[in-house]
Amino acid sequence: MPIAILPERGVVEVAGEDRVAFLQGLVSNDVAEAGPDWAVFAALLTPQGKWLADFFIHAECERLLLDCERAQAGMLAQRLGRFRLRSKVMLRDLSAEMAVAVGWGGAVMPAGAVPDPRLEAAGWRLVSRAAPAADASAEDWDAHRLALGLPEGSRDLAAEQTVLLEAGFDALHGISWSKGCYMGQELTARTRYRGLLKRRLVPVEVDGPLPEPGTPVVAGGAEVGEMRSGRGARGIAQLRLDALDGRALRCGDAALRPRIPGWMGLPGEVAAPGG
Image (cartoon, rainbow, N blue to C red; front, side, top):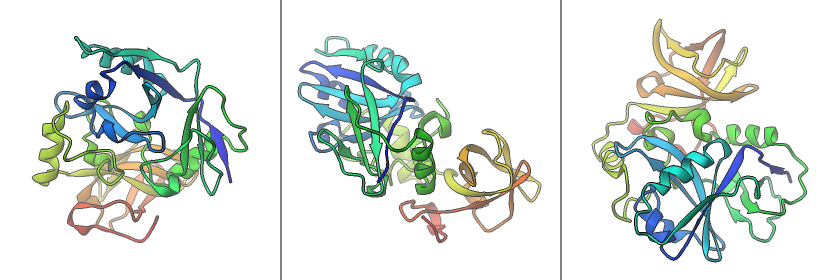
């Protein structure tokens, strides 16, 4: 029943009476659904609909706490601050003061923790000044999320390039299709309704030495994608959908085998056992 502290996660506070309305017009999911017992998974996009950052929105008393990548916390607070205008909100990077913890595999959920909104098997998340006792490492958590096929922020998504549906945000409950307008909504909706998706972040099994991120994936002599994050014999690769047809995939000195988990819907009913 592992519990781990994630030192690479940071926290951005959004306080003030307009906090929900302020974020609602900027991020991909319905901020109003965040509550004491539930977090919201969402992303901030460019006006052109490309990924900039993703985070979990926790509601705590009179503020919202964004559980985000620690390296992006300052950027996130600054970018959100550009849109404050007359909104009654205050933004602060609290990464130095607060810890993010996760538990999975049946770990008892402590007070203040909420279920991971992406997948039940992902366990729970906690943002707190007093971190719980940990019996696992951040590396253990990384292995768990790779086993589930969950993309991990900038390790798998490319800033100002990745479209949310390429990263499975729809299936992982990271997009609201009913809440109204937000920055980048037009491309996100068009990608869905016009079937424009041509590539996808896909969990892969690695047979051979783990390729470095950015290593091209090749099928039949043609480049069909690139490696993203990985650990041991599991990884995430960005692949063209037409490469998921059973062809042999090579990446550096390793062979890759796509492993499509049950949560991952793919266009054209492309599917395989796994996850």
